Length: 197
Image (cartoon, helix red, strand yellow):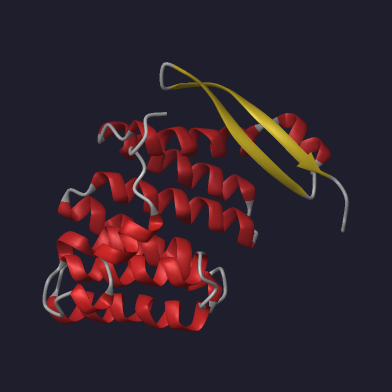
């Protein structure tokens, strides 16, 4: 990896410090959500991070920042909301983010939102057949929008849900890793846990 390709969190943090954000700029919604994400995920300040996430959502509504809605909702649902609310509460956030992304042409974040939705739906406990059917529909939309990166994650989830071994053995938890060749999913590596504790 080349040096300097990854922007350090400290640099992102400096850029999106709340004092540098305009209360009326659409990009500020993402800035507040990123600040909340950093506070929750890296600094352990969950309550304050959640407040910044809520501030991002309030600003979205106040200034009607549709162009930033899908990204902001994805950040809130993936990194902030579940820290203070039930996991199922994120499902509506992700669905709203997906819809917004499709409506505004932000297909990348529409895809990220639906991947977040699918993962949290699975973690929260859902009828596998219903989820598999629903994800196949989203996968077709992502294919039409040429969103290959998020489509790979949905393919991974769909193959996992349909795997006879997984259905028969029903492990307590599974960690899946895609095996890719030239950006195409060619296999899945499963690490499973069958212990209760």
